[in-house]
Image (cartoon, rainbow, N blue to C red; front, side, top):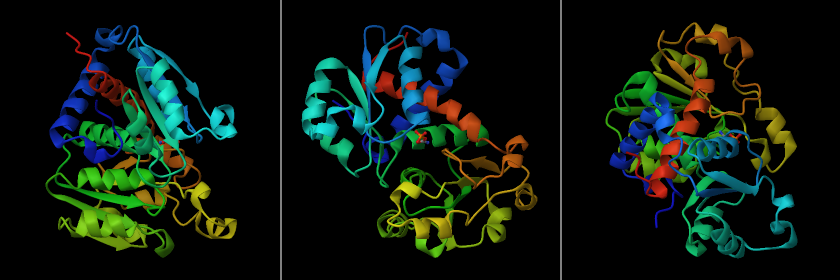
Length: 306
Ligand code: CP
C-alpha cells in the first residue's frame, strides 16, 4: 500500500502522471464523476484548515465518493488521550483512504505505520505539506508550461513554512531551477533544507532580506504568511509579522509575466490591491488543489478511469 507522507515519496515520473491526470480532470470533470462510488475518505484534522480539508472533501465528492472525519482535535477522542496509532487502526475500519493534518511533525508517518488504508500527510507541524506542493507544481506547470529553468523567489516565513520546505525538496529535482530565499534572518530556511537538499545537490540559491532588490529576477514569487501558531512568544511574532507586504509599488519592478503564488491563508503579506493584477495566481492555485487531490485519490486507491 502506498502513502503520501513526504513529497519525495512520489517520483518525478509519478508527479508528471498526477499532473497530467489533474489537467484531464479539469478539462473533463464529468468523466471522473463516478470513479470512486462506494469509497470513503476520512479527513482527520487536528489543526485548523480551510483549503486542504475542504478541497480533499470536494475532491472525493467530485469523484462520487463520500467523506467523514473531524476538523479539530477537540472534537475527536484525541481530547481524551487516544493515540494516533489507535485512531488510525479504528479509522481503517471506517474509510478507504485518509488525509491527516497534525501539529506534531511526523504524526502522519506514525499513522501510516499502523494503518490498513493509504494515509496522506495534509500538513505536519512546520515540517512538510506534500499535497500543497502538488498544487503548487500544477499551478506553475499550467502557468509557465514547464517545471524547469525557472528562478523561484520564496518570501516570508521560510523557517516554519512547511509548504516552502516541501516545494524546495520537490523543485530541486528539476533542471535549471534557481532559488532566491527572501526572509528576515530569524526566519531563514532550516539547516536540513539548506545543507541536505540545496548544498548537497549543488542547487543554485541565495538568501537575502530585501524583496525589492531581487524582484526583477523572479519568474515565480511564492509569498508566505508568518506562522503565528509556531512561534514561542507573541512578541517575536508581532515584530516579524509584517516583514514583507507585496503591493503594486513593488510589483512595478517585477517581470510582466512573473506569477505570484501563495498557499493561503493570507494575512497582510499581499495587499488586496494586488488581487486584480493578472499575475496574481493564488486563487487559481486553490482551485488547482481540488484537481490534483482528485488525481491523488485515484492513484492511491488504484482506480482506473476509462
Ligand atoms: N494552504 C493550506 O494548507 O491552507 P489551509 O491551512 O487552509 O488548509
